[in-house]
Amino acid sequence: MKKYFLGISTFLIGTLLLFHFVFHPTYAGEWQPLSAATEDGAVRRPILLVPLDSRPPCGAFVVNGGKIIGREVMTPPSELMDYYS
Image (cartoon, rainbow, N blue to C red; front, side, top):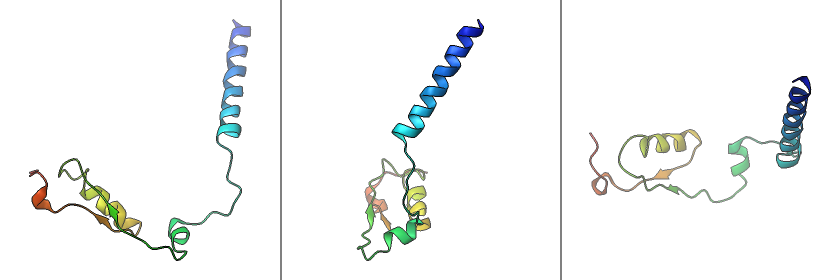
């Protein structure tokens, strides 16, 4: 039983190390906040969102998230969406 546990533990640790170092190598560059990375003179066009329906998680939450990161999120007019009450 002890050999079995040792073999499984070795396999899991080896798999974890392989996954971490081979498939997810660390980034060696200089980290920048999102606002600094996008302000390099590129045109900041609005993001077009076509929500599934008019529920807040499908539209309003995404628009508010866009405001947090400083991006405009455009949605269709409410007259074209279904009525959610």
